[in-house]
Image (cartoon, rainbow, N blue to C red):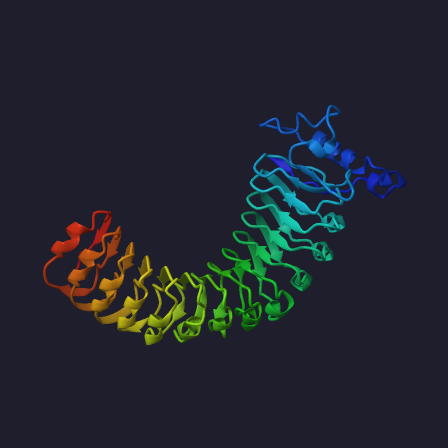
Length: 385
């Protein structure tokens, strides 16, 4: 375990700091503060070479002595940083402690990459002083409290990940207006509440949204179809209450690959428009909702679909014969519904299928002889038919 230390040396505010030795001294202080270096990464950090040649250190082209990037990802290290650092990569280490307020003095920082550590406490308000931030990656730590609202005013942020922490509060309703450059947003596995802001649709370049395993409530975010670049939408395990009309909006998302909305309170039938989703869609997962009605025949239009998950709903009727067109399907989860009729024999033509769950329905007839063609099948559940 190492301490995550950004405490600024008094030297940094003295006149001596204006010399060309500023960053070298800071790096040496960092090296000396490390109690353990299992890979010997810092051993070559000595007077035999220039500090800009040390492993993990990148210096500025305009100011050759000035450190602009320190990347010691997965090295098990922690320590002091130069205030001129632009890229901070200390992911997958054993950093502990809190993110200190003095991080706001790293005035040139554009990338903060400290995922998979043991950081605790709240995200300091001073982080919002870093107006040049573009990538904030805080996932897989033990951070608590709320994200300081002023951080959502740093308009250049395009990548924001704070998943798998213990963060709480709500997302500002204006997030899509103040962070228009967002392409990746991951707040999954936290304690967030409130509604998912409709303004997200104003971040027109947004590609991936992860809000899973929180306590968001209210309707699905409106106007998702405006996100033409949207690829992934993970909203599993929240308290969202709506119908499935949002699917119609998603038909405008030509790059869409994944829809995951299991374990919510989404109610009603699947719209026929599900068959108009982009052919790029590979995974649809909407189990454990009060979903009723029949499976629309248009589902067969999604010929690149590899996962269809609709378990633990109240679906009725027959499985449409059009499902035979899903030759790329690898997993079909329809257990615990009220589906009837014979199991379509065409399922035996899905040669890539490795998981088939049809348990607890009202199917009848013989077990598919064609399943012998599914040579990759490793999970088969047919009991209680």
